[in-house]
Length: 178
Image 1 (cartoon, rainbow, N blue to C red):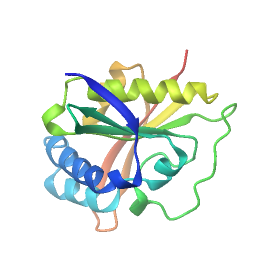
Image 2: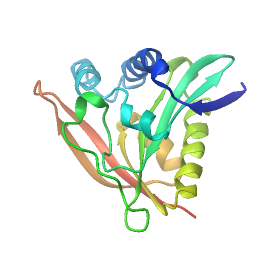
Image 3: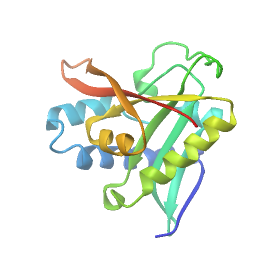
Image 4: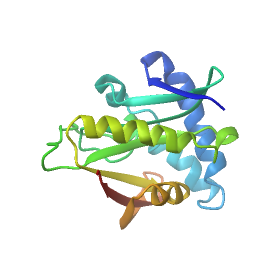
């Protein structure tokens, strides 16, 4: 499979929303309940358009198909799409702060085929080129194995309470860039 990446555009948003929902619904089975999965799609997971505006959100394609997405951020938000943010998202200082790895989703038909690793490498390279020395992310439980394999270490478990009373366990992870 030949993977390519490019910056996401606003025209990609409908396809990204479909990919995100399919990814969460299929790849979260066994980690979260059906109610947690549906609640997380409604209240947390979705496109963060600030990443598109900032030029830090990528799509991965194989054979002309959108197979994954992910980004990095120079802003404070650790996870969540537009529907999850209620406040301004201030810029980080690369000398003091860790860049955020954000919004990674792989189409279930392409899971465990190197798509996540490919996008992660694109994001880590871009964050480093922008002066960041450390990275931080909020991982879903199914994402922890990939991030651990890529050198991220867990440092905090967070149970995010959602507006409908469901909660979602997430793992804060970090990595120093070489």
